[in-house]
Image 1 (cartoon, rainbow, N blue to C red):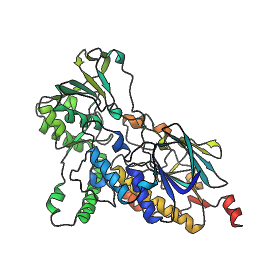
Image 2: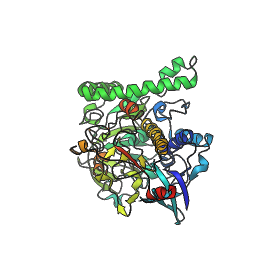
Image 3: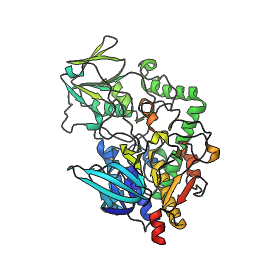
Image 4: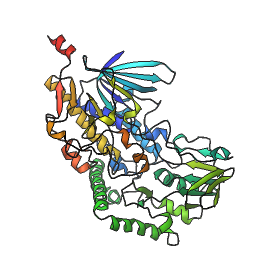
Length: 492
């Protein structure tokens, strides 16, 4: 059994970024990355449906230390995957990755201050790895399957039924009639990507989602690209976009009616003859759920071409030839795509114990949204829902490295957050608040609690957290440090 100072779980965007920071800031620490799949990239390797792309701009989804020079603001999946792979290769991170090692459980032993991580290889063999610290970068959704409602009569459908999370490489949709169930980012990406090749494609939704046009290329870069060095320009655009993201989100909280009209007017401008009230006007305010980015109006262009449309209705049942709706209408289909959302999981769906006792994260309080009461020596990465994931992942990784070095300077090998007496009257709040999206609402009861004050609030506010987490006092009276008995005895 190999021992490491640090085990990173996950070789996706967050895990590779974390490894970079660890190598630079803690060069004396040994580490490995345990990756359950056989490739780097995480989300960007798993999803292979037509048009797969980011819905966050690459200047903020990209790493702070590696400028994105890929051109498009909303990059396609293969380009993002290459970007992550290139980061791992250029920084000699690949040799630290153990592929096909799906983490099943992690067991903490207080006496030795050691996490024993049990993995299962795809060949069925079981392996164990030990470390003092865990950095969890496994994402927040179930890689095995997405959320799938029960559709009455689905077994009767004679065509092909497809899930975006497991897109068949051999699927031929040329000249076919396609229905995409869903109205989120996946559906809004698939529809225009397939429209040119199909006979017709319909996005079937129960209720609309806000859609916002995004230019494929950053105008700021076009103007300054010839005169400002690339790396400097990247940092400027990253700052600009992060600031604009926060300003837009803040505006939706202060003036929801005004921002709602702004988004709907953009749609009406693109589709002046369409029933925008029915098909593009959500029942909620902007950013109560995540916005759908529409690069260069491609979704609206597909509708204007006549090859795509939107139907707002409820499914009654599947038929042999398509879908019967509650309204009585039947949508014919050769292919049905169930873009019905994600299933969230907590900390990679790993089973955790502390000295033989199971850990239930729903019983814990979150410290800055990344550590948990009663759970030592773990930092977990959960990105922003109202901004780019990597902005938070970079903050977490930098915090983790500072924490590791701080523990070494104190001669400690155990750290965990502990509620102060003044915090024990806090009323628990959901891990993510003011975001009633279905995939969140279905799973919030599984996640840690947050409090109503620092450092227990999970603020989802990058500007605030960059200042507070980036310069956090590691001797704040909440983080408690100790040395395991085995280490103490060895020293004696």
